[in-house]
Amino acid sequence: YPGIDFLSHDAGHLPEMIFGWQGNPHLGPFHIASDILIFGGFLMLSSAWRVLYKAQQEHRLATTGLYARMRHPQYVAFI
Image (cartoon, rainbow, N blue to C red; front, side, top):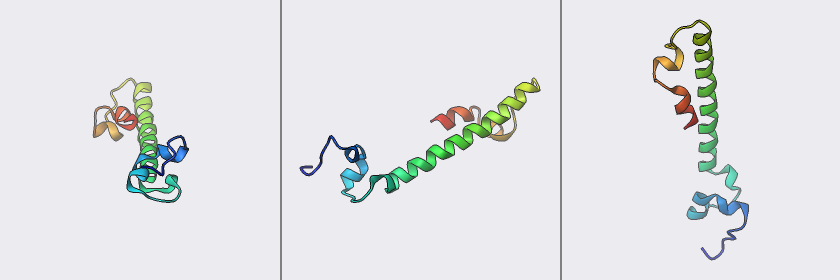
């Protein structure tokens, strides 16, 4: 990659560099997909926390919402 300035910010967006895509790398498909996954994780985290907090206040096991589908939705949201 002779034309790459490895000290520039845009060089940190490796998929765009490898595929040779021009333009703003923050508007590329990998960056947009990453933003969607991060936002989805925040939604999942807040939804799971709400169910867990309500169950803790009622001194019961959390078995509704995302906890009805998976054991640790907050861990999945962080990942």
